[in-house]
Amino acid sequence: MIDRMIRAARLDIQLYEEVEHRGDLTSQALTVVVLVSVLSGVGLFLSQAISGQVGQAIGGLILGAIAAIVGWVVWSFLTYWIGTTFLGGTATYGELLRTIGYASSPNALRALGFIPVVGGIIVLVASLWTLVAGVVAVRQALDFSTGRAIVTVVIGWVPMVIIMVLFMARSM
Image (tube, rainbow, N blue to C red; front, side):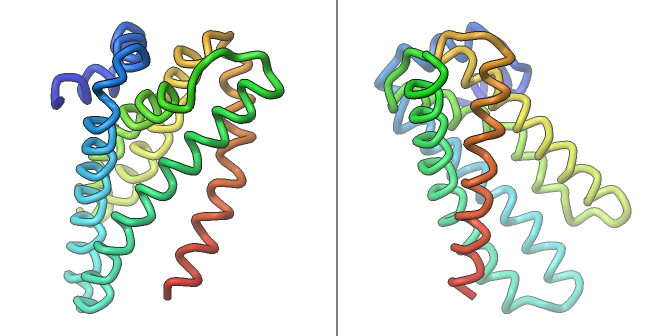
């Protein structure tokens, strides 16, 4: 699994093709999402704990893991629906779940977000890298051009972010 995560972060097209076609990797993609969310949560936890907000840090760790799974499911569905309904892509929902799950791999670097001065930069780079990996994942899963993948990812990402912000606001 770790090797696949590294290949996903390297934007290895063959990895995304492999993950797309192997239905037995869906649970492993979920494991990737959970692992990445825990690592992100650890970075946030350490950042908040260092600033004396331990109670918020524990809540953020738990809420972050739940939000990551919800975000993965929602974003995968939205990209599936947009890509197949409006842009002529061919894929199953499971194929999008697996490829997008692995595309979250660069966000593991968010564990370093607590580092003073550079932590915020690391989190930003990891987020942008994950978005690029998402484009590669969607392009490979839906079997269409990079341009269509970018449109699909952006259109699917905006409502997903809105849903996640509402989810987080409601939970607090």
